[in-house]
Image 1 (cartoon, rainbow, N blue to C red):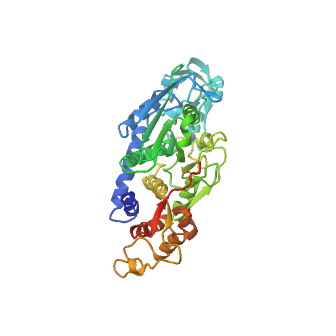
Image 2: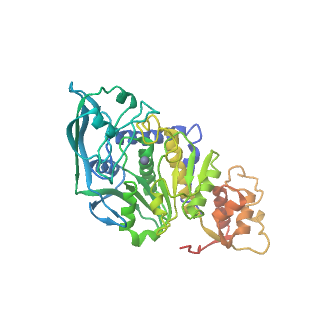
Image 3: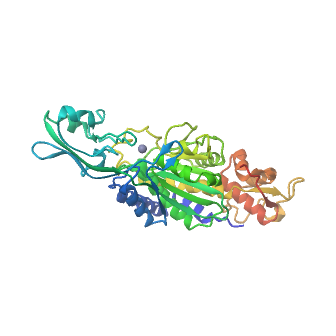
Length: 454
Ligand code: ZN
């Protein structure tokens, strides 16, 4: 039986070979260029920036846009007022903008309330934020749930500001509107779902959050063209309030989510970090661990903790969904995090491609993680007469090994999935899966129903 994901597996494998390296390069460039297109947009948890971002994604995948009105109760939270901004600056007495939102959108604290006032530096100072340790970087600050205003600037620029009067203008609006999120559902053979969630609420920063968005879009494009057993759901939502809102609106159907990944920070030069779901030993946790273990690359797996990205909501005790977080340098643990230094130079095309390929490999594993029953359980079957044992011809080309055949035969007793077997044999999943396919072809295995673990 041909593996429906064979084509994809070949694609992933060949990314490493010099001949096909150019296809990996093209893919990296494609993801990167989309990131560069989205980079200038001023996003926040609500507002036109999110809509503009989702409309750009819609040109690639038929994303559905949802609008949830301000004031909607979502569990213990309320959908906030919509925030939009057209201009913001601090102007000196010579009429020069010394801090200008139009030069970099990080200059304005997100959700700043409207201001139009002349004030001395002493009055302005509590509203100015810098990073003294990185004096050339602009910090990223927000004040979503407490009305406030502020500007973020380079520390070197702050030090140059004379003790003078300044015109402070924030041309923003905070009004009843809606929270916007995007959802792309790709139906499979079964209604069981694989969830991919990424946040879309950060202004001009690349690793956090454009890398997650752009890799998720490419994954969605790929999955939409593949034959698949699982259904896939891609969410493009504002952080925290977006996942809370989505969970509140979809509470009745979340049990369909069998595996999930929050995708974020997947473009930096660091190694892959996987943060396990709250369950800790869910199939997604084991699948990612297995793929990383056999990837030949350095990686880190960390236990769940209730801080970080939207896994906090998916893994809250009332949901406890099998959703882990796939990233590279962990949340907050790189100096460029939440600053203007998280820019287009900070992300690497190789990292974007590797993150994409590893996620696909995880899904390939989940798609292929079937359970079989050995049809010849009393002693080993005679493999030689079936052409499976020490075959001389074509031995070099085959994916499986004899050891993998013996493992699959021995452990296929209707209680072990192929992942169980791959883990126990400490062999790559692909080898075990190929062995199972070879045994299926000669009638030595039959697929059996996996017990539902829901
Ligand atoms: Zn962030």
